[in-house]
Image 1 (cartoon, rainbow, N blue to C red):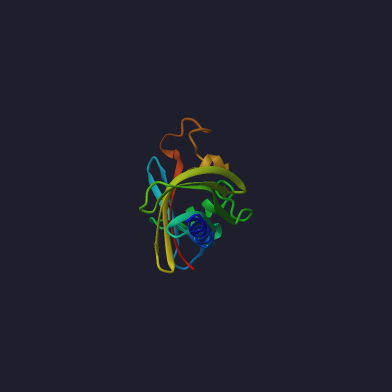
Image 2 (cartoon, helix red, strand yellow; image 1 turned 60 degrees about the horizontal axis):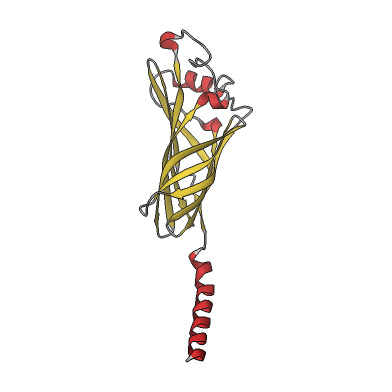
Length: 197
């Protein structure tokens, strides 16, 4: 009887040894830059502007349906303005040193430092480092990831304070009494990453 029990324990140990690595296997999904998008929205006293930037690269690392790591890089020189008249003039200003200084800082990026599952429905709290204009700041936001077959899709709305990245133009923090010329410090990125194995 003792010998049988010993053999069963050995079998269980061997079984765990072979199954655990598989259960912890991380699969890297490469972001499809053609179908993935980053939309930006910025507001001021008299209205708002919005547009897009093109994704250069990115990845979602998954353990089954659990997000383990994520990263993406955008090409700031592709920034567009899509809300109406005067788009090219505004685009030029946004690419100048007053804002993103794309000649010197042509890309921006995000890399996770910690991912925490909120539930079993694909909702996560994501912490990581956002780099804009060569300045890196720690940020936290909620994200949702759906995995179906060979594809994973990650979506998130990321709110940022532009002054954290040395973008001070018409900011109420630095220039008082701007009146209706005030531009709000917070802007928003709506990220949609479509990735495949």
